[in-house]
Image (cartoon, rainbow, N blue to C red; front, side):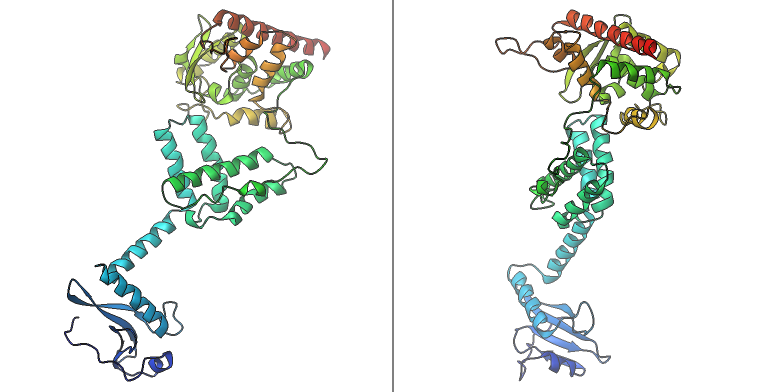
Length: 423
């Protein structure tokens, strides 16, 4: 509705009290030019604004004077809204378009919850940064727990109070898990860093929240920053005997058997493929996801026997050597080996971990087996430099590594036999 006539200035500027008493009709505000009040016969009172864009006249409804309503616009609020709308009109933007943009922004902000951004974060890294399956699963597992606390919160509204709520369950547990607590915070940091890069948020509120992490009480035990490992030969022999005696020969059981002999990461072992194995010549070749480099692992006779047994059990028909029991087309989750240790073999959480067998190899291989430190490090897939500071080729000393691998596996058999004799 347009008109070429202008509202006549009111005798007195409108007030809230005056508006309440107005009957049907049209009333100019008397203060803000172009703003007027329309009262219908049924008593509905609306604020309207007459404005111009490109020399054309338009009328826009700002809202209602409706006491008790959440959308009520009093006289002062109507004047402020009129000023903002006229500022937009001067810039050639219709007030209704500004409202649409604001509503769209509000909907987008509400839709961009932490869980939605975290999902996008994972998918981005899987696609663009070639995350390994184990890295993806680890992040999804952590994010699922985080989502229980803040998953439905719009990412723009995340604040330190949400971080406190996330860390509180870890801090109230009888058995402290400082590593898990720190990892949860680090995942939130990474998700919010992605949100900032994507311009969903203007700042990463998780940065600086390290002070919210629980601290060791004076005189209390220090947290174990490395993966818990068996470093005593007698205890290792006992473990090997208990593992061998376990009746359920599941993929995780075979995985632990191999992990005691091969100095690889649990995630790498879980993803072992048949096409990467040469059992006749005793080698396993794969790409280490952590450093994106090919790694050759010599297989001792005992490991080859275990792998042959897996083939005989028809598990070798799958793409993965250790397939998931729920979906044979996928590898087992490395977490299943930890659960075998704690739930079935009865080891307390934090006393031994699957990853810790790399430390067992590194420590006990040097003493008492006296394997050269460089050979041990190369077997772990670590970079080793010569006296001049040049990195050895990762395929150097393959013969020495093979000898070391067989020496270590034979020694494990001796430990297991001593346990049996002493039992």
